[in-house]
Length: 413
Image 1: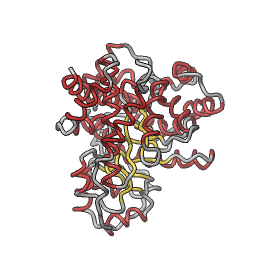
Image 2: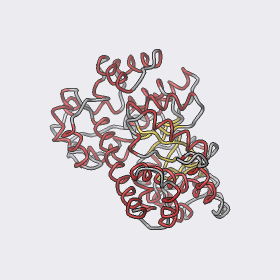
Image 3: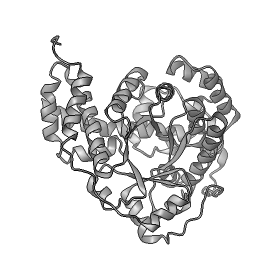
Image 4: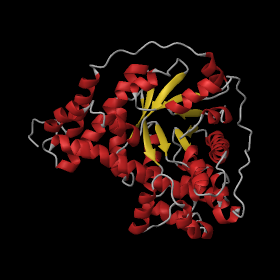
């Protein structure tokens, strides 16, 4: 790099902030008693979309944030609105190898679209790391810090639930950087995260839990994710009270208006556009907190708890509690040590060691894995539904990230 040329991070930041300066000022929105009542029940309201116009059609003063992810960002990029930005950014990074240039432009687009949402709604926005960072502590730290530098008051950095993500999140939180710890599927996932890494937010992707049970013929799928979310809320709140470090629960991957009603009182809901519209159209707006509810889950005829080990979604075992205590008291030096300690503690199904063929099978099945393929491992305790969905979710995000990267590659070739 020539001596007079800025570092890549500075070039990208200046480019993003210059482009963001062209965005329109925040729009004006009104209040809505319907959503106000839910806020008064204790729930902060976010919209789960990267589509500015769709968000504007629902936004009221009761909403405070939006979430994006690799899938939602890819949808916006594929519309072509940012093609000219990509083409302009290419020469800015011409001293990088092509793949690194693509990662930088993907970061730039995520930050720029995040700032566009911030500007339009005067809201905070969760921005997501490139999936190439998911198992790399140092790169997670580097790009998360860069997101934070670009918009320290408005960006919440999404870090995926992996061993590397846990290690990185703890460091980021000690630096005061807000983290939305994503791809959680159970109370034990989030108990471990809150106890060890104390992220600002944790998630239960509840709609995918319901779909897993229903799509695999294990039961009707009703209230599975809702039960797991409320159990996680109670566990995370207890950890926050005991440690003095606040972690808040997000109900994510909501699929219906009914779920908005059935989870009233949860710390945060990030609601997709369709679910928000359905809730607004079909519910009365009379809210009752569901925090003390323990919803029943119905499995199909002949399907047993022991076979599915479905209880891991809402129960936290002694092995997980001891692992969390141990990690908090003596933090691991890196993700491999964390995995080793999980295996030694009897909680190895949280971080199973899977080969490339097994990971390929997870990716091939899509967001909702085929239970029959994994039933023997789940029943034996070597794998679990929450972990399987976590791995499938990361694989799905990776596929969408690849599609985004391919569009960038085509435009800068």
